[in-house]
Length: 533
Image (cartoon, rainbow, N blue to C red; front, side, top):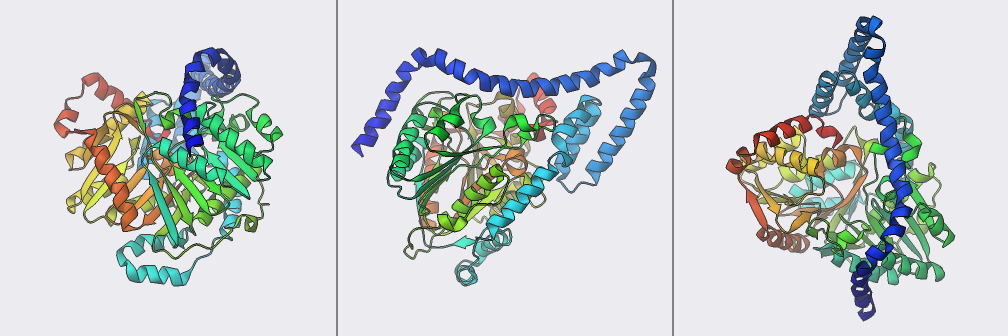
């Protein structure tokens, strides 16, 4: 333990050398930056060509706009007959009307399903393969339904979406990212058979150096290490030879959705936002943190970085393992993994801590299970509901669910950042306050800095994971979380929420109404593009 503390302390000293290493880091990361910029340039180039056409082809401008009108009619008919949410449809119709040329291009790139249909079909096939290894214990479900009939309604829905109910779990909660990393490092040291790691962002720095050192040691001891990350989340913040170096060191590596592969259709908009660590199939971790120094407050980007996470030991870890292996197969493009190889190595003591491991993504879009689970948690709250989220850009249905809870006597509180990481998203988050504040939802901003924790909690249940309260998490990203039914665990997390609220400033409706006029204008404009944020 003392050695681990010295490592973390040493990691702070690491930052005193950052300036000396900045030039080397910059050169290493520059290629990733140019790759991302190239994608953006290609999109802008395509849009620019279309915008300039009427000026170049002046003699046939009338015919051009007739064709444009036909495309508009086709686009609107396609949207009207789509089964996606009304807010989504309205946003795209507004974009097409306000930006009659580039709006159509944007819809072709981001809005339609056809560009990703083949990839989605393959993902669905792989997901079904993984689901074959998920066992549904009807006896356990009946026991839970008898003990907790109200919670059983949410549980039944999750079971119907192939998220089994698990008992015999022990949960540890971490109220800050640095605490979660300390626990992860300690657990990795104990690994004997395999380690599974999946993160959205990987950034070279002190956290990565500590993690890398441990994983190298375990590989030398014969432990299998599978390391997976999202390409967009790591491209700019790692060396261009990052994957190659890891594979040479004995890592098994997969990258989710390389951004250069789908430049024409921009499937790069769909990312894996999942965060999972599994050790020997017995212990799993998830939460809001990524592999980067800001998540452990080793560097200061936006004041204090408030994140959270959980350690799961028990039957539910199998659900986390399956979620990881499914995404690994998605990266491979084929369903070839022997899931049985990654079963837990031991049985777990009996416990009444019940869990569902949930996941979501574009391939699930027609049912949106996680969004539905959130709405049910809101609906079945009786006393209080607390939500922490870095972004608050939600659909009308979610707003109505929150307001209905308030009108039913539930104390609904939402915590968002005071210092944002993205100013345009902060403007939209603030814009979404109004309707909620007007109808009694209480909103707080975390004054010390940036709250990145993703939690929804009522008096009976809690979900901790990677899910933001925004369109991107509910519709575009692959996400994961753990739903927990246990009074002790809920109580511990509620205590952390209460402590966090003491560090927050409440936003009043009257204060919100006094926003500067220019800010209101920017928010109205940005809101039109909220489905893209």
